[in-house]
Image (cartoon, rainbow, N blue to C red):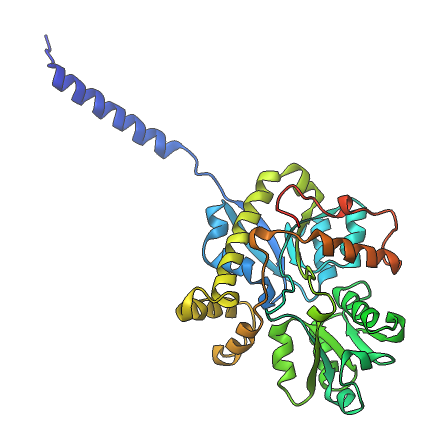
Length: 344
């Protein structure tokens, strides 16, 4: 007969339990991260996504991210609608609004915004145009202005500048060049007279011999919601948890970016670390010593918590409708899903 004391019985049971736990744990499948593709431009303004990726905020939210880079906003909207890209961060365009009207995409949050006292988008003139009399935005009537496509954010900015200066956008010769790089080349060579662009590109251009700063976009659109976060309507309506996790990580990246380069509360070491992180994506073909000033000068405010400025979004939508670039029947509710972030 085998006898067992109470202590030895407990020890045996504990050993069996541990063995079972080990066996069970080893047989359980690991939870796979949700794989998503994020559309972006190689701009400092897209830094919150890069920060969220590099600092593991996407990983913390159970997201495995791959970036897909674009040359302009409208192709990114098409990629969202087709399912090639899950989330995008860029300016509102006529293409995006038309896709929203068809029920394909939704704006779900805010990114970059013009703010008084913070670096913002510059209005630039070619040196040739400047020497010929284009000294301020008021002098742009009758001159050419570079845009990527009709219905782009560049088109919207040009029209707003013209409106405030008392003439019509039709008094500008809008030149569609499809890509930002092509506009840069045309401006420097004097093939277009003017352009407006974010500061990480605008400031270095204005410091060159071929381009002159003649104004600031914030003087014409003071609360411009420059970039927004958007996704497919299917994601917004059926994958709310995925959307929330993406926005949580994106907002953390934005907080770090603001602290390091906008509010400058992260100290010199924090600013340097942020510049080095962004350099992996912005001007990666240049030595960091050359890229760093442009990256630092390009720091515009990213809305805390990815909040969305609905007042300016309405202004943008009204302008697109007034210009006949989108259907008159589209509403803010068709364009924006306000469930995910604070609005103002």
